[in-house]
Image (cartoon, rainbow, N blue to C red; front, side):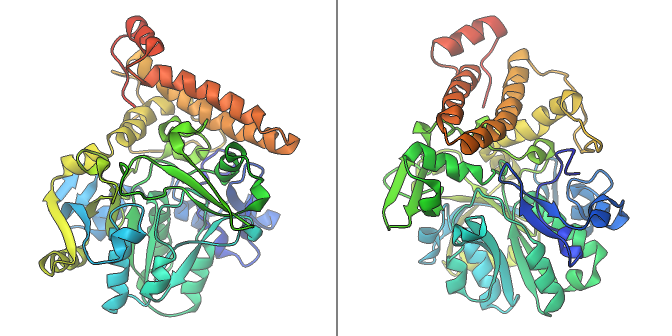
Length: 451
């Protein structure tokens, strides 16, 4: 799986052997490490618990087992009880979060009502251990607030699984789609996890970044990465649109450095800088196997509201009832919407994970293990310009790791940043419909490509 680029670094496999763990590779991604007989020996157990394994059950089967009575079955969102757009009206939650505060609100409500004893979520940590974030089990609302906001950084679940096996209780886990899938696959294999992991909260996902993304921030903000003690990928400012991201670094001396993403050489999320290879083979945008999943409302008028707004797809009848009580009590400001509305807020992600994935399965799949997805490999109906967009993203993702590694090893950040700016200009020419280069591509290749 690792050699094939299909390991996302979730840590589920490493949690099964006391001698195994998750370690940083040269590209600042997490991957399993352990005894040779464990790493190299074929294992049906490991093959069935890995979220990208071609023999593990897919998202459709997991969802059909967990939500058999869901009234809506949508090809994009999966099985759904209800969908909403809005935010947490209860004070503190929206202000602390990157978006509308609903992830923290639901997690907190599960704790306050005694539905769970602890919530596994990601918190910032001292980078001396190798990363800026890790999973932690929180048992109070105050602890939950330490993990609010979005984290575009590798983390892994091995410690969470080990803790839950060793300590009885009821647990909720917050994670991106592939991590939530890994949770359900582990639950199928281990009755103790099935009984103790009672709730899953999913996050809509564009892709996973490597930890080198933080180093790129530091290079471009003119600060030594070894002096960085904390990173905030999305500083919230009510005076600015929600989608105007601003990177913010806190240094060891207490000083800070920040910059808007659009001024960075690699600040266009859709271009795929530092994207993990496994993300090329994902077809789940909205955490289809989670009891409830949350995203940003990237449509107007919500994307211009700097306070942040969530879209929500709820699959568990229990959590649907919880949201209804929150609305009735005035603690949540939510409006019901349909599946099309939610899917439209993530339109670019669905194009890349469906149309783009169908194309990548034709030409980019390689290695000893080939991915098996719900998307059928095809080039049918994909214009040439779209194909160039997908190939450019794939190339940017792959070469960003290599050139950033070289820049790090030589101490010459310009090796990476110079290449990144040139690559972003080429990507912009393919995806932007305005400007001379975009107009030239329009004339040569047809209609403008969407991002």
